[in-house]
Structures are given as C-alpha cells and as structure tokens.
Image (cartoon, rainbow, N blue to C red):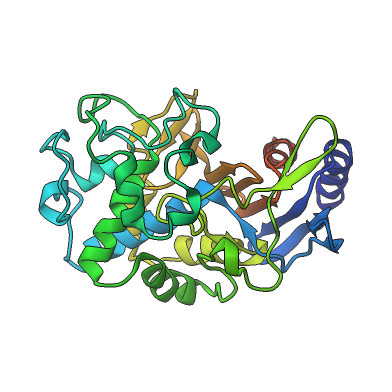
Length: 343
C-alpha cells in the first residue's frame, strides 16, 4: 500500500506541478511523506515536512473545538442565542440565531464573501483594504448591517461570516484574543508548537509564501489577496505533522471529553454534495450508513488544503499546498488507494 500511495502521489505531483507537502499516516506509522516545489520561489527554498503552510478555511475546525470547550465548561450552550452572547448590534439579523446555527452554516446570515455569488476573493479588498484587517472586529463592516440571506435553519449555506461571529463569541466568553485562545487551549494541547495565526508582514521562518499562477507563466504572491492576519473563519498556518497531531488529539479526546468530541463529529446537516454532511467545523462523508471520513479543506488565492481522518482504517491524510490548486487531485488519488485496500 505504501509504495502504491507514494507512486500515485509522485505521479500527480509531477503532472500538476504541485507545490506543497503531503503526509499519509496509519495510526503512528508514516505511509507517505513527500514534498514538492518551493516555499519561496525567489530564493528557491524548497518545501519540506516542517514548512508551515496556510490552510485557509481548514481551521474552522479549531474554532468549533474552542466553542465546544466553552460549552463543556458551562460558559456557553449550543442553544445560546447570538444576541445573548455577543455585544454587537446586527439590526437586520433574526433574533433566533443560535451558536448551533452558526457552527452548522444554517444561520441564514449574509456572508462577507458569498461563494454562491462571488468567485474573486480579491473583489473584497477594493473598498476595505486587506492591510487594515487584523482583528475579528475589522470584518464586521463587511456584513453587519446587511439583510438576512435565508430564514434561520432553512438550509446549509457555507458561511465565513458565521465563523467570524463564533470567533468574537470565543473572545467575549473567554476574555482571550481569539488567536491566543486557540494557541493556548488547542495548539499547546495537541503538540502544535509551530502552528499559529501569523501576520503576512511578519511571517516566522519556514513559512511558505502562497503563489497565484497566471496562464502566461508569470506569478505573484497572495500577500495582497488576503487579510493580513487569519481569523476564526480561516488563515492559520500549520505543518503537515502538526495537523496529523490535531486529528490524534481530537479523536483521542485530549481536546474535548468523549461526549463533546462526539457532538462535534455528529453529521447535523446535509450539504450540497451527495453523501456529504456537516458537523461542527468538519465535513463528514458517508458511505451508505457508515462514516467514510471526517475531513476539512481550505481554498484561498495561493492556498489549497485537504486533510481527512478515515475512522475504519485510522488513516490520516494531510495535503498542504502553497498554490491555489493541487490539494484536491492528490487527495482523490490517496483516497482511491485507501478504498481499494478496503475491498
């Protein structure tokens, strides 16, 4: 199996000119670990297993773990209403929105980047320069006064603004800055010393720059395409090994009790894809009535990321890329090999 996975990964990396690092582990055994391309093209610094990569929306999982911790501690509940746990005015929002709705993308609120109607993330920064967005409050003017998009609970509508609100709730409930809370209560507990919410204008060593490629062969970095600092909806940096550590810590109930880990991993709502559901901050794919995988993903200009835990085989996959595309193709190849072995 190891040889097959490595061959498949190598083949796709070469064909797609992949840039990033891939890790496949079975419990604690490494089945494949491979890097390709440059973390810094100008200086020709190669990607490696200890390169820190941006993971875009992949870190919504961190936000949901934090909320579950605060619920487990009795500070919040999943049924707490938004207006009761956040001292911010939303004049047009429904009064019945709860934390559960925000976690499952069913709150019906407007999004600051609505993937159903927008396809160019950079449009956002024309009126609101990305270099001014360093805190969660900085996102509020992008959606705070807009009307509801849907009725509360009407359907799944993937929503970044909802996770910004969850981050603000974490700050108000814990009295910690969001990034500080995550680093103290999740990264430290999960053995993620190299991971963090770094600012584009002060990146630590071994951090991959994100690259946007153009059809004519030219490229640019993503420094002017994203907020300066990631927040509760996306934008943390991790290494592949530390992302695997996070799955271990979560599945082994080191971040939450067994009861709250189970709540986080419950498939609450059908998403827009066949066999796909959403828990709290995590996508869940079923095969008939069995769970095929728990997975997270993130796509931004200059970032593509996929990571999954397959409960039946205990396999964990982490695919971090510092290009806008590439992670999905590798994930599909690895998954085909995993499913082939099951048969």
